[in-house]
Every structure is written in C-alpha cells, then in structure tokens.
Image (cartoon, rainbow, N blue to C red; front, side):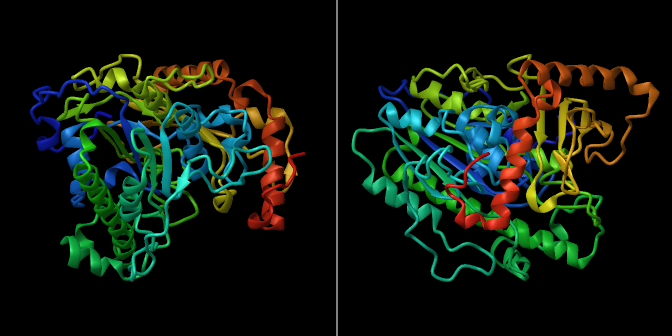
Length: 482
C-alpha cells in the first residue's frame, strides 16, 4: 500500500541487474517457511521496525519483496488450508473454520507434488488446528514428519523444536534424484511468550523495549513494551532458523534451484486494551497483511519490490507451475510465476490492485471476532461485519446471516492503522460504494455463502466444532459430521 516506507537498500537495490544462471534441467525444490502470527510491520524491510531479521532480508534482497502479501483469513487453520488447496477459505466448506477439517475432495499441493515425484516432508506446525476426520485430509498430508531434533534448553515460552536441524536431517535422508517440497512450520512467535524474553532481545539482538514497534492504539507502558518485546524476540529466533536452512541448502549445493517462500500465517495477536481485536482474527491490516519474500536464484532476478496484491491462495498454483505440473481446475488462486519471472518491480499485473479477506468465527476470541469480509486496494479498506452462525448459542436465520450488522471504511493513506471509521462520511461515498460493489461481485461469483445465502453448511460446521470442543479436541478424530 502507498503508505509503506521501504528500506532503500532493498527497494532500490540493483533492480533487474542480476545475471541469472541457465535454467536448471529439473523442476525446483520448494522450501516453504511459515511463522505463526506475525504482521508485516514487524520486519525492518518494510520500514516500520528496527528488528534485525537478516535471513528474511537476504531472501528479499536476492529475490522479491512483496509489499502487499495477504492471508485469506487471519486465523491459523483457514489460512493454512488456503496454502494447501489454492482456494479462498470460504471455498473450502468445513476447511474455512478453525478446529474443523479440510474435506478430502480438495486436492492439496503437497499430495499433487508427491504424485509427480516430489519428496514431501515437514517440520513443526503443519495444517491446523483442526481434525483429520474421516472426511478430512489425512494427518500425513505434508509427507514425512521431521521433529526429532530439539533444542536442549530453549528460552522460556519458546518451543524446543529445532526446525533448522530437522530440515538438515531431511536433506541428509531425502530421496536421491527427487526434487523436494518441505514445509517448515515455525510455531514462533505465537503467544504465549516468555515473560522476560525482552531481556534476551536486548542481549542477543541489541533491541531494547523502547525500540520495539508499538501500535499507536496501545498505551505506551513498560508492560506493553515488554510484552511486545517478548513477542518479537521469537521472530528473531525464527529468522535464525531460516538462516541455518539457507546455509544447509548452500552446503548441499541446492540453493540455486530452490524456490524459497517466507511468510506468516496471519497477523499478530494484539488488541486496543479492550476486547476489540486489532490484529489476529480482525479484518485490519495487522491481522491480514503478512511479510512475504520469495527467492529462486536460478530463475528469479533479485533486488526487486513488487506492489501487486497477492493471496495465500496463490501459493499452490505457484508451486505447481514451477514444478511443471498442471493446476487443478478447482484451484482459484493465481500463480505468481509471471510476477517472479518478469524481472520488474512495482505493479506487475494491473488487475492485482485489491485483495479480499474474511473470517468465520475464531474460537477463543468469540464473540469479539464477529465474522467479516473485507476488501482493500491501494488507498481504501471496506469491511462488512456479520453475525456468527449462532449468537449466544441460538441459531440464526439466513436473512440475519447475509445482512451485515456493520460496515466500516478507512482511508489507508491518512489512517494506515485503520482507527478512524469513515463509513458515514458522504464525501467518501463513491469510493465506499465502489469497493462495496466489487466485494459483492467477487463474493457472488466465487460462491461465498455470505453473499449467496447458502449458509447451512457453515451452520453445521460451527455445530461440529462446538461438539469437538465439548468432548475434547484430542478425542474426536472420527467424530461424525452431521
């Protein structure tokens, strides 16, 4: 978006001047590196933060930095489902909800690549949280699981999984002669964080709590600064794992022909001090706008910054296209390969000038996380909030579910943090109505139940999730969907 201030070293760095190696004979490897709950503003490459993340910066410098990368939904399970299936979350039936399941009828990019000769493996958090029910994708959908390598004495609040060591173990044991797809699901910086990791942030990375980015709606107190510093410390730790993974690829002579994608599943968990969510599970940029950098030394010119709006649904078609595999008709995302291989910066595809996101109920934040749909372009954001499929335990009629309970409108140039709702401003009515109509058209054409009125399956899915919660999530692998 136009309010983003880019670091000159990345934004203007030798654009298009990289001499690419001859195209490799075989399909590329894929390393998909996904952190958990991180907004784009945390990365210094975007000009807001001072946080040192040199591995991410390397991928951006040697590849492409996307300034408008968006998750389809600011919630773990539906956003990760979109990555796997190449679809918007509302196109995934039960897969559009947290703690439900992805129906088996939807092909996943990992399964397709495995069927076409790829060695598929993962470490850390894959798809979830949810159920691998009888009707859902199986638990091994991300191939072989590597998780034996652990950190002996991790900082408090940090998971012990040594993601980089597990990736190195995979490289040592991968199937010879096969390209690979590796999902590195780093659980950090998902809260809760260690209560005094802000001290480690200063000791290990030279960033004091006073230097940590604090959103303007948060009161500037020592407690808030310590909390945010505890959180971003884990982003720095995750970046260390990425650096080690890149080093492992280099040691094996594999980096040149590896498509490396680095992003986060959704934004940070943060509120304005009340129950009003501003990040994760909210329709605002802190919830949906994520860091995104992509490199592929053999095929993609580096030093470029791209402003096209891109979605998590675009990843699966990109991976398949890079592998030379046909994209299933049901995948509605669009491959990023034309952008990556264009050698250009700025807006590459003119019709990538807006993005749609949304949410259907996010468990622990309910009812504050009222379901919503949102569309934004370079200048404005329009939000429709809906009732959940039940309120206070009572199911609602379809008419009450397709009629928004509130509309919001923001001028992102003047108000990048989306604090001043201008929906009632008559001077902006034309821009508001333009985005409202575009959102309605997209929702209707793409079969979004909030616009088509076909809400029965969403009702049943919510009831299924509630039943899972009552009987205990860990005991419900085969809970019938009724």
